Length: 377
Image 1: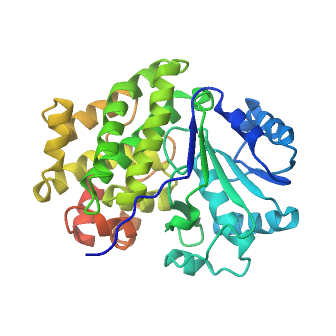
Image 2: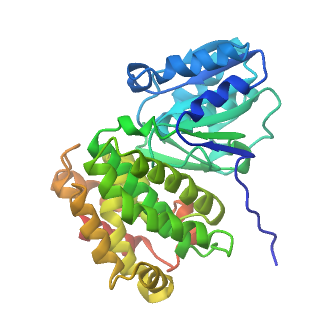
């Protein structure tokens, strides 16, 4: 029997005001890595810098990480890190900032790394120069807890899920004051990303007795609290529960892996720029129906929640938080029928080759994936 692992960050610090934990670190220099302007706009970047200064550290900032971070962004970020030589890399923001910072870390410690090696899961041994802290501002990707990073090759329109326990953060800080600033549509999209992580981890062929209870608890929390967080942005009980659910689901899927919800979402996101959580939310009911004949675990979820049909309940949840049921109804980007038809074969083949496909409960094919895409469109 092959050995299995359950690995998460050494320390998970959570609760209102937990950002202040940065003041307790020991080191000489820290680099904050962040995305657009929201962390600066709401004062969290300045707070993080002040806490690190209080810890006696000199602080540098790498900002402007784009929503779908590119290979160029992470390579250049590695060079910026090398010029400052931090002891700590502190990623603060949405999943894109956290994902990018993880791979910047690789290029900081090993500048000659070939990206294709990372695609093939050939990662070097990290922590030779710095340790890594992740502070999420959204309750969704769980990058703060996982061995995953998603980086986009924009020239080929492909999102690559990169996986290695080496990039699991050393410390995760979960302060619900940060996601309380998310607008409703981001709350919805990231919340359904949590649901996809939890559902896919639960039915994964790599699921274990360690991951199943975590996945079920995350599913329960999302069903109960996502509509509340969507309607009442400042409800800190709902925000705290959703932030914890994101990390709990991350603990499950980083150890159990995922399935074809994520395989298909990665590729349609790479082709058309659909945000990841939104793509997961639209695809999930169709794939629950597709996978159902090969696993009894959806029935277990239904029994735990006291519902009759998981796919229909997911569709109802989508409606409650303003998410359309088909890609043709998406408004954040425009996907024409002609553009979708042109990309369909390519997306289907690429999704089949995605590493998340390996642990899907039902063996699949590019043809089956093509039909799921068509139904979801």
